[in-house]
Image 1 (cartoon, rainbow, N blue to C red):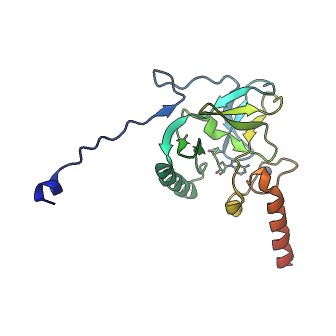
Image 2 (image 1 turned 135 degrees about the vertical axis):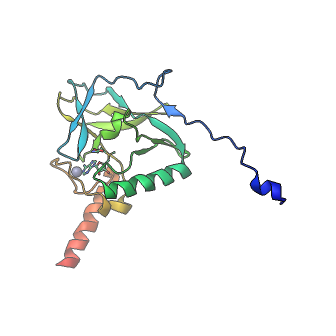
Image 3 (image 1 turned 120 degrees about the horizontal axis):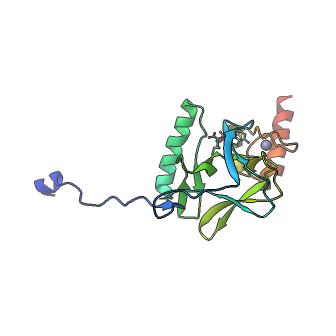
Length: 192
Ligand SMILES: C[S@@+](CC[C@H](N)C(=O)[O-])C[C@H]1O[C@@H](n2cnc3c(N)ncnc32)[C@H](O)[C@@H]1O
Ligand SMILES: [Zn+2]
């Protein structure tokens, strides 16, 4: 490599960020079914601004489309920040095997939806967009929640404060509940 090539600046252009869900003016759409407020589950949450029937598209998860490598980098930095300040940990949502959505933007109020073991919404991938869809009729003022679908692996790091009758104590996807219950039973037995 010659001397010149060492001092040459990279001419590789940085790609412009791609935002999902903003209109042509870069504005987020209005989602009349929801408002934000303090939550008994954690910090701030999302609440029904009116009665919502079952099966409604309540709100879209907006954000920047990012590849997995960048996603891991941002998730780690968001997680570290959350340990220093009491903010929601990670606002990254998996879209597909290659792409995630970083929803860590003020204008993405869907990021404030908390997890519940008895959720009233579910996250659905609707033709490449993530929407919270109501699983039941929701009353005005109820907190909007969904199942975060976390794998069992890091269960201890995610205690659940959803307060629902069938709360399993940790944020773990429903398919892993039986495994989680067995695991906790074994640990209790060992400790006694
Ligand atoms: C995407 S944020 C949700 C919004 C958050 N309440 C806020 O004010 O930023 C996710 C974080 O919220 C908290 N959280 C969400 N659901 C929870 C639950 N059921 N129990 C305890 N903490 C929860 C956890 O700290 C989690 O990492
Ligand atoms: Zn719970």
